[in-house]
Image 1 (cartoon, rainbow, N blue to C red):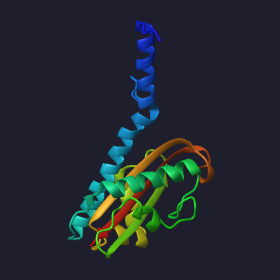
Image 2 (image 1 turned 90 degrees about the horizontal axis):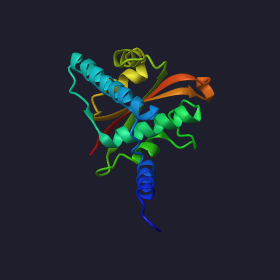
Image 3 (image 1 turned 30 degrees about the vertical axis):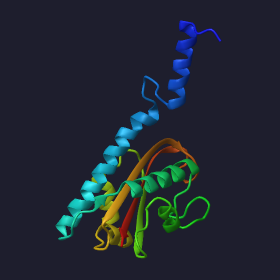
Length: 176
């Protein structure tokens, strides 16, 4: 194969496309910044609520954040809203795939939320604090780690009615 400048340019573009390195950010990439800001705002608001109740802060855990992101994406794209996975598996089993267990003792909890894309960190946490089960997770003394993941979808199917939606999963954990 003769390597002309045009051939090399085509190969470079193909490589960039294969690696997802397009020059202009995709809608997903632009959304990821907004999603990350919401994840951060939710954690900050949960820690403020915990401080107001004399509790220590939750630490962001990358493993739990990955588990949460996978679940938020699965729900938003699959058009359902539940702690169980799309295949019916428990949330604890799903989280355990990502959250490495140290020793025999570990525990996980989960808060979910779906709303319009305008939801903010304060609103999300205030909704959870108004619900006894969700409040117990936010203010739980046992929890040390948390991973939150917000996903924005422009036309989510199923229970979301092909409307714009933000789906949030926060997975809480304790090991050892």
